[in-house]
Length: 320
Image 1 (tube, one colour):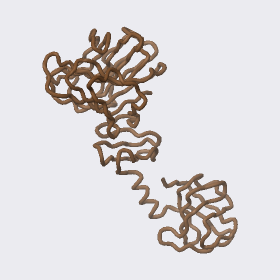
Image 2 (cartoon, helix red, strand yellow):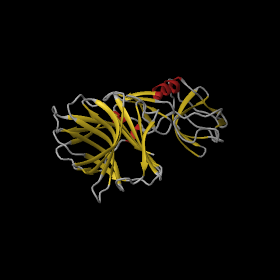
Image 3 (spheres, one colour):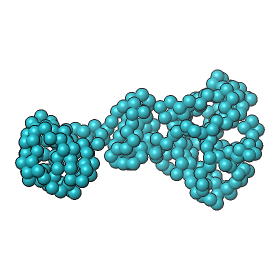
Image 4 (cartoon, one colour):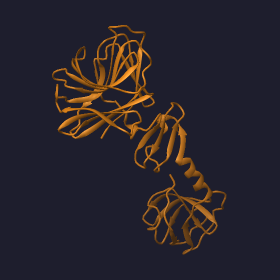
C-alpha cells in the first residue's frame, strides 16, 4: 500500500553513490513513518520500503529513471508518480480469490472475489459485504473452534466464507455454538434464501443452555416457501415447545436477523437489506432458558412431506 504525506521535503545527510540502498536524510519527520512511498533526488526516483528514524531503505532507479550519485544536502522530496497513481487504482478496486483478500485496505476500497459471488467495501479497518447486499464486518463469519450440536446426518461446510448447512430428511435442530458474550451485545446473521420445499424450515441464531438442553431459535421460519421472522422455544433439539413470535416477511433473496441483549430485555429484529431494522418482538432476558452459549442453527420439519435435501447458506455472522 502506497503511503502518502503532505509536503514532505528534506535534504540528504551525506553523499550516496549509484548503488547505495540506505539513504540517510536530515529530517524525516514530514514523511510517512513506514514504506512504501516514492522519493525524488535529482532526476532519480527511489522507492522507499522502510523507515527507521531518519534512515530510508530504498530501491534505486525506479520507473525508468537511472540510479545516480547524489551529493550531501541534495534535495529529497516525496512525489506522486505514475506508478503511485496506478497502484492506488489497483488498491481501490481489487479482484482475487476469497482467501487472498488483504487484511486491511484504504477506506472505500473494493474487493471482488473471483471464486464466489461476493464483494466487499473497506472502511479502512474492517471489510463489509456489499454483494449480495450490505453486511457490516462480513469478514467475521468464522466458526472454527465452535462446538457442534446434534449434527446427526446433516453436513455443515464453510466454503469461501459461506457456511453451508445441508439437511437431509430429519426433524431436529442442528447447530454450532460458542460461549455467550457478556451483555450488552448484538448478534447478527445474514441468511440466503432457501429453495422451495414442502416442509417447515427454520434457520438463524440459536441461544443454548447446555445444562438443561433448552434452545431458543431466532430467525426465519418458512412453510411452503412462505417466510416469517420468528422466535421459537425448544425443550430439547428434538422437542419443540412454542412459537413466541412470527411476523410475515416479504420473501427476498437474503434475510437478516439481529438478536440484542441489552442486559434487561432480549430484542429481536429483522431486515431485508441489512441496514433498516424492524423490531418484531421483545421479552425479558432469560425467558424460557438461561443460555450459556450462542450460535447458528437449522431445522426442518419433514413430518408433513418433503422433497430431498435442503441447503441453508449463512453468508455472515458477527457480534458487537
